[in-house]
Length: 295
Image: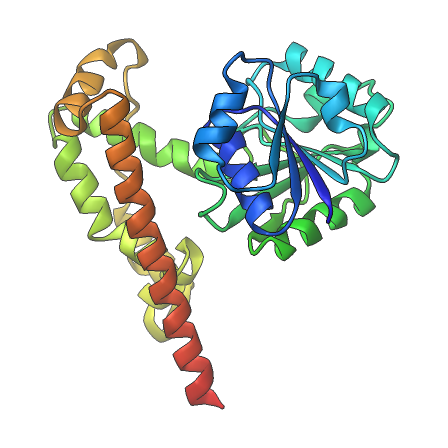
């Protein structure tokens, strides 16, 4: 049984631990927090997961490492220095960072060729995508090994050709989120209505086809070129940007719709996961039906 070391027992780390454990890996979950054992017993009960407070001990003998610690470059440098000294030369050292460049915390590390970003979307055990982001020092062998591990875990790993702040997923997400905040700030729409609008249009569309395929289909037989030539000239309005110093009222409006607190978070998380599984199951069934009909 292969061994994975997961660093960080937060939401992402615990979800990664569950993903690897359910796929037949022995998991070592590392975090210095005093309640680590309670987390293992509560959130990972019945799975082959062991908690470790000592990072070097957790990493020694691992076959794959996934770091999911705080988004602080100095701390990540310290973590990856320990990992470089505690793992074999063939072990991938992957980070879950959401936006930090891998070069920012791998520079000067003797194992820089083994360091790569493997960025998931939350929760990693459920959402298929994993962005694989190399630094200039990352070896192709490391990229390929990371890709194969997540492919075997049932994920959809996508290799980026080079590093860029925010990678691809979060750059797209930021653009939409900022426009959503701007529209609420301007009094155009409320957060609840905006969410319903996205779920009933773009969200549904993008669950089946991506932006470029959507533009291809939207242009009819003429494809994307037709969209650009005939509709593009009308899309010249200023998008505007949200006032980052005036996000308080936006947060107030969002909290009025969705609430706050641990129990509320658990309720919303359960609903999100249930609906996401339903969408994934439906897409899989539709693809299987198409394959059967084509055969």
